[in-house]
Every structure is written in C-alpha cells, then in structure tokens.
Image (tube, rainbow, N blue to C red; front, side, top):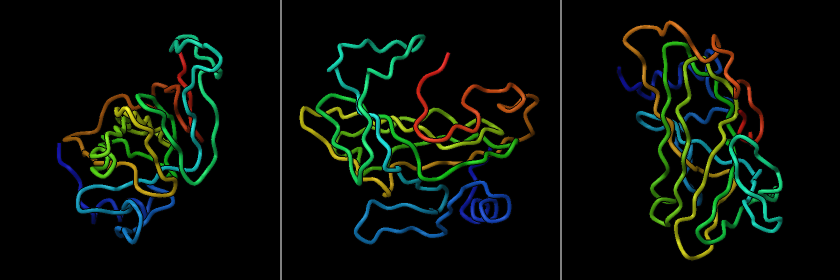
Length: 184
C-alpha cells in the first residue's frame, strides 16, 4: 500500500472530483491551514456544529440515538465545553476511488490545545461530507473555527483493487450530507 503524493491528489480532485471544493495549495494566512499538502489534504470544518449537552438528561446510545443529546449551532466558531464533545462536518465533499482507503489525522494546532479530532477511515467508493468528532480533553472551554483547517486526510492506494467496496455493501453512511448522526 502506497501513500499518494500531492500530484496524484490534485489530479484526482481536478479530473474526477475526488474532493469538492478543492484548494490546490496550502492556505495559511491568518487561519489554521487547509488545502493540498505534500502527501495529504487538510480539510476544513464547516459552520455546522452539534454540541453535546446534558440539558435534557438524555443518554448517548449508539443503537437508539436521540437528538436531545446535543444542541445545534451554525456559526463562525464553536465553543466546546470542558471535557466535552462536538460533531461537525467537512466543508469538502469526498468521492473515494475504489482502490483507495483514506485515513485522517488531527491537525497539530488543535492537538496542542487538547482538542482531538477523530474520523473513521473513508472506505473505497464511499462518498459524502465527512462527519468530524471533536473532543475537548481539557478542563477549559475550547474553540474550533469554521472554514479553517481541522484535519489531514491521507490517501492510501492498495496493491490491488478490493473485491467488495463500501458502495457494493450499500454502506449506511453513503452520500451523507451535513453532520450525520449514528445509525444502526
């Protein structure tokens, strides 16, 4: 399995729409950087946030998820309460090729502030907005900025094409738009 370079990412984004909208170079002027990097793509967080709260005394249950577990915020930034959690999504829409698996790592700027970004792998032939999970591991409120870099996606090309892709399995998160909640 090989990690794919900037030239391949750019070609796939421009020719087959693998990343939309696509930023062909690092934008870092006064913002947390985003755009194409040497061996990855730094995606932005959109201005749509779901902040977990205990106001309604709801329980978080992945088999029976209730929207009473969070409050919706659409803003230029989001404050994550201490030791709390926020769901968000990427600005970018991804269409993953059949021979590629994508993994995501958080940006160091957020990690150094105790904000951890988690994303499960983007499987072959998956497409959609990526739901981002932000955890504030500090005892202080933490701020996340919309339309700025949040995480880096690394594209791993398999030695051969998979037999069954996410599309073939009719994956439950296929073509998701917006922040997508857990499904069973």
